[in-house]
Image 1 (cartoon, chains in turn green, yellow, blue, orange):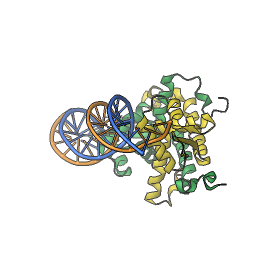
Image 2 (image 1 turned 90 degrees about the vertical axis):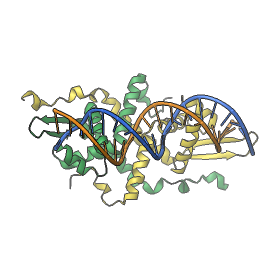
Image 3 (image 1 turned 30 degrees about the horizontal axis):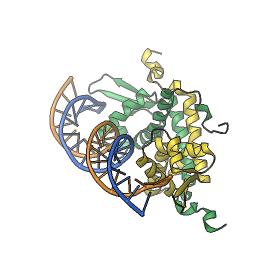
Length: 130
Length: 130
DNA sequence: CGGGATCCGACAGGATACTG
DNA sequence: CAGTATCCTGTCGGATCCCG
């Protein structure tokens, strides 16, 4: 259809569609978003332990897993300093920063309309004889 | 911090934050998004069976569950026509339509940069002695 | 310090059978 | 037609223990 708001997907392969969907779902998920936000908020590279402190409630396993995923997606950079004890720092890439801005835009839109997301307010007028 | 891009969340309760997060995660998820898209694409109310045809691969159980969730979130409207056999039609609410547009915007942004989401392109220059 | 390996419970989602 | 009920399996995430 001509008016399809997802027109830009028309010439995509199934693989590209799946890749885009995965990226969107990841960025919208709880832990990845909070981690990106923590890194953005810090304004400087964060060590593993500091990041874990800033993302309240996350387990070490999920923190590690998500860091690996975000790194392979090109959203963060992991830098290992081979000292004793070892030091590892994580920071946002420009792409990660930009994606976070996009998601924040969506968040703001939703938060501003929080009161509207409720079935009580979606009463169909025709059902009332209007 | 003053530069926090999520500043607009600062005066939110934990419940509001959780609610917003849930809404975002739902809208970004695979089946809800494809269902909203199908309803938008149809341009008219769809019956249960027609919707199931248009959302390829979805199970009847998940279709029902997701319809209930979307309805309780005020994104779609369910209209029952007490005929024999029964007829039920689903359509987007204005809010549902608007949310879909917001998510589509995010999708377009990601799709246009699909090639960038790849760790190979996120090489840290300082690691190369630059 | 920054993880890896393992076990476990909770829950999402598919397949199937049945119903007003 | 438009669901509901049930079973089953895969995955996610928490907790714990261990290592270089």
